[in-house]
Length: 449
Image (cartoon, rainbow, N blue to C red; front, side, top):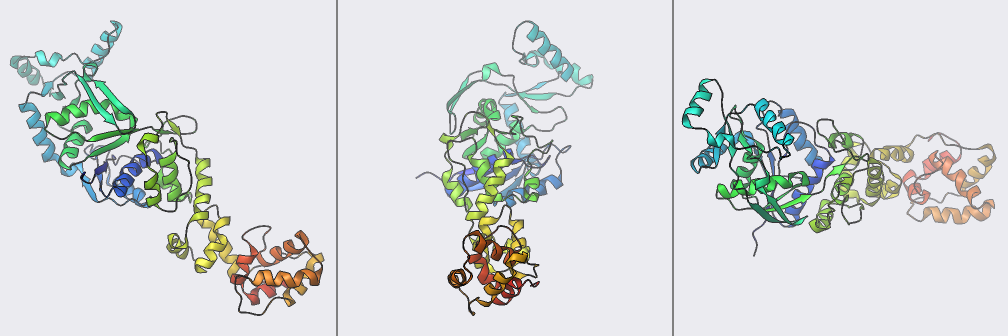
């Protein structure tokens, strides 16, 4: 029997999450949820110049809005001694070596290689330095950055999304794992964390495919178990432009403030760019059941906010009352499940519900045309006595139609205008019992009620 999977979402708290980040978070969290595994939220916050506590709180808020609850929360800034130990182990094994070039010197070398038709790779000049050379450079005030010496081999893995993959690390520069100021890069910290936290599956964007070959070599150099990797396609704007935290594209916070349904955002983020139908779901378990990494396209997927508008409305039309009860109460909406079932099919946003509650509760100025005054008075007189149930509207029309001689629009439209003040909306059959006989009769008589 396989052990329960462990997955992680590791955002940098340097900006607001957008729907592309949500896609990665959802794939990890929902797969762990479905398989009875563990979902870790891990803040990649070692970049102290850009990481802020404000953005860390925003990340927690935004994934909470989506309904994702981490089983563990970790901060890389709390784990610096772990990275120190890993660095010393890599130095001792000869896999981490000091390099002293400045960025300007490196760029000059890259340009030189390009002019000669060579790929702009690091030439490993630092490996040729003698102890005396290093002493001299440090006496000049230079401090080394530390590079991981790649094996220069073909690293293969079976990708959950892309199938069999190979990266030839001979085509890559030895990556810098430690900056000259002593701070650590993501390539190191992520590997150390994944090993020590027992991460079994790394699901992330396809922009990390090349990193995977490097990270597998580092994992093996540290004696860790190589996880299963999956690289999903990326979401773009309708224009094809990539999403950016820095530019605030389609941030989860903005979508929440627009009144979009979290379940609709989740469904569109997960299902867009797959061979699965994009359709509303009523809970995250239903969405988790749909995840199939083999059905994710290899091409970038366009996330259209117009599709989200439609999906938010469709989601509301399917949601059961318990899923919205607390939010309706916060909006001051009563009526319970009866009201919700009456109006949900007419909502574009949940924030539209108070409008229809106001129609039910009143007071309302009825819309009465002069030619309909007598008909509406007759309709008021024929209202059945209370108590009312769901069939009162049908019974009322059965008496009103022959008595008035009206039918079709001439029958229904004046009743709707008088009872709701609107040209269209939820079925009167559902609304009438909620409005009640007293208010209904007053409105039919043209009175504010």
